Image (cartoon, rainbow, N blue to C red; front, side):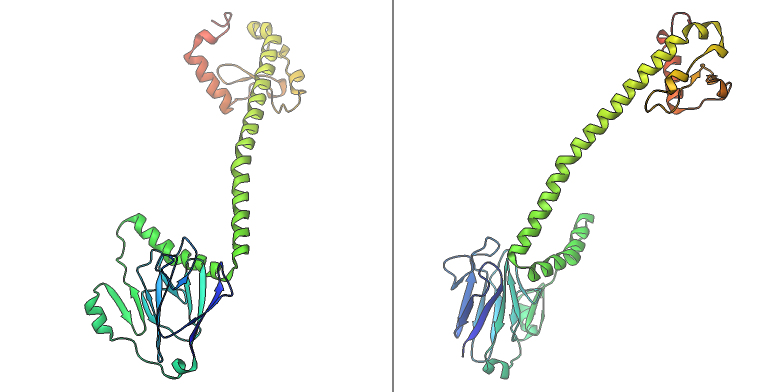
Length: 281
């Protein structure tokens, strides 16, 4: 009875391959025995060597790696129902009773370590040993690689291809709307602020024009601000002198006025006396 390889997730989900004794290569290229059509798969990605007593996987130097049960693997003796993941494909190995009843040990670990330094080997599984990054960017990338990539991979393995594409399209739409709407909202906010500033400047000019003579003559009791206070969206109308003392309205007479806008404008007037009215000079 031959080894069975079933595609449980990916572009050709449901496809079943029967592997005879010997080595079977899998990859994107036409020279592979089993073609896995995806740009995420190398031309010769991995091979499966089957015999009467074992089934062994070997990565053939692929770009994106070969995973067995979610673990990046270079070489491994497969057990029944092990899951192999390459690119968008997830495949399950079904071993015949003869292999299940005759398990064998992996090749000697010591000999493998001597021949390939820098690789840590365990029985039936070989895992690349990674150097610990020294740069800050490298440490953050390793943290991302160790923490988030397994979550993404696990989600990818559980979701079928149409669902995953739908989620990616939804994220794209949300991001596109966000980038498109934010500048419009920002521009609208700037227009509203600019209009409010123009309105405030106009009202200030009207208050100054009406009270001009009374200010020059020092008639504080005759100053009028009530007409401006009735304007829409106006919260406060104050006439103050350069010392920061309120001259109008009457109910706030002689109070100290410390509004930040007033203090900033007073500094401008102190530095540029040519902005003052001729009577004030």
